[in-house]
Length: 173
Length: 396
Image 1: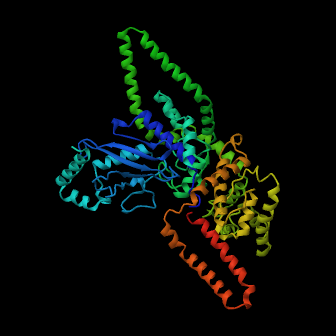
Image 2 (image 1 turned 90 degrees about the vertical axis):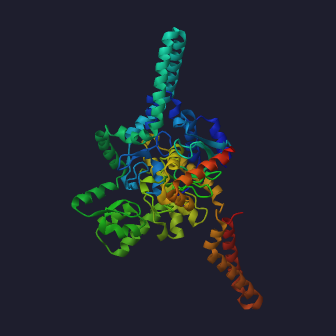
Image 3 (image 1 turned 60 degrees about the vertical axis):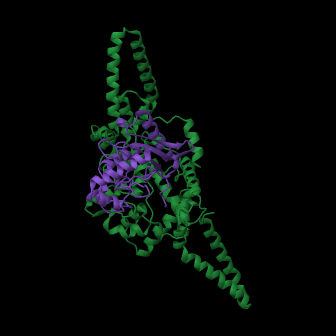
C-alpha cells in the first residue's frame, strides 16, 4: 500500500498510447479490437475477440471487459468475458485465468512459471493475443472451470459440441 | 478525478511511434522509449542485464518485484547504472523529432502527388510497390513490440566500452561516499550489501550501519576514527544525523545535494526521528506516521531518480516537492475508499473493541465515583481523538 500508488496520470498516458497504437496499427489478421467504453473513463475497456480459426470457437465474436488499476502498468488489468465463455481456463463468472495477468502474489493454481507472469512491459495487445491462443489450446494444468476441464479431458467431442452450441445460442442462430 | 485528466489528455496529442508512417522511423522512435511507461526515456538507467528503463519507472517496479521487467533477471537498486549517452541521444531525438516527422510527412505527400501525376501504368507499378512496402512495414510493426524490448540493450551494446568508462568516472563524481568503500575493498575487507539500503559496506559494520538508520556517511566516519568508546560513537551517530539535519533545514545544501538518499528502516525510528528526517529534506510533517513514511519513501524515490539525470536536465528540489505534493493529493483521493469493508472491520476489530471498552470504562467510572474525576476527562479525550482518527479511515 505504501509506495504502490504511482500517479494515475502515468497510467492514463500509457493507456492512451496503447489505444492509439491499437487503432492505428490494428491487430494482426483483425483478430480483435479493443478500446475504452467511454471517453470519460479510460480505465474500463471493452474488447471484441474473434474466435480463432480451426477451433470450436471459430464462428464466435466474444466480448470481454478489461478493468485497469490506477497503477497500471505496474499491476496487470483484469479481463472478464461477458457473457461468460465455456472454457477450461475461464471461471464460470467469465473472469479469465491466465498466467500473463497474474502477479507473483496471486497464483491461484501454483502451476505457473515466473516467466509467464505479468510484467509492466506487457500490453493489452500481447495479453489478448495470449488469450486467443489460450482459447485454441486450453491449459488443463491450471483449470478455472473444473467441470469444463473434466469434460475436455474425458469427452472432447462433447466439449466441442457444447462450445459450438453456446456460440450459436449467443448469436441467436 | 480521472475524468478531468482524460479530458485534458484528449485535447493534447500524445506522441508515440505510430506517428511515423515509415517503419524505420517508427522503430527508431520505439527504441528510444521506456517499455514501462511508453514515453521517451526520462533519466534512463541500465540494469545488470543490460535492459534500460526510466529511473522512476524501474524504481517503482522493483518495490513490487525485484526483477527486470523485460528478462526477469533479479535486480536491485544498487545495480542501476546511469546512462548519460542514451540520455543525450534521447534529448537530441526529442528536438529533432518534430522536424523529422514533418519531413517524413512531406516526403510521403510528395510521393503520393508524383504517383498521381505519372502515367497510369507506371503509377500502378509504383503504387503496388509502395503498397507492398506498406504491407511489410505493417507486418514488422506488429512484431515491433518484441523487438522493442531488445532495443535498448542493442543500442547500448556498441557503445558499451567507452560508455562504461565515462559512467564509472561520473559515478565517482556523484557519489563521493563510495570512494572510501572502494579503498576499503582494496584493503581486503569483506564488503557486503546492506539488506535495507543496498549500499556496499564492510561486513563488520553492518549492524552499526543498520542501527544508525543506514547512515553510510556517518558510519564511515565513525568506523575510520579510532574507537573512542561505544557511547561516544552512538552520540556521534545520532548527534550528527539529527542535529546536522536540523541545521540543514535552513541551509541550501539539502536542496543542492547530489548525493543519493539512502533507504531508511522506518520501524526502528521513533515519531520524533521520523519528523526530523522529513524536516531534513524540507518536507511537511502533517499527517500520521503512515503518511510520513509514505511521503519519505516517495521522496527518496523521486529524489534519487532525479539524480540519475544529467545535471543540466535535473529538476530543482522545489519542483520535486510540488511533484511530491501532487502525488500525495492524488493518493489521498484514493485512500479513503476501503475496498472490502468486512476485511477492514476484521483487521481493525481489536482496535475498535479496545476503543469501545475504553470509552465504556471511562463512562462507567464517571457515573460511579467522583474521586478519579481528575483522570477521566483525559481518558475520554484520548479515546475521542483516536476514534475520530479511525473514522477518517473508514469509508464515508
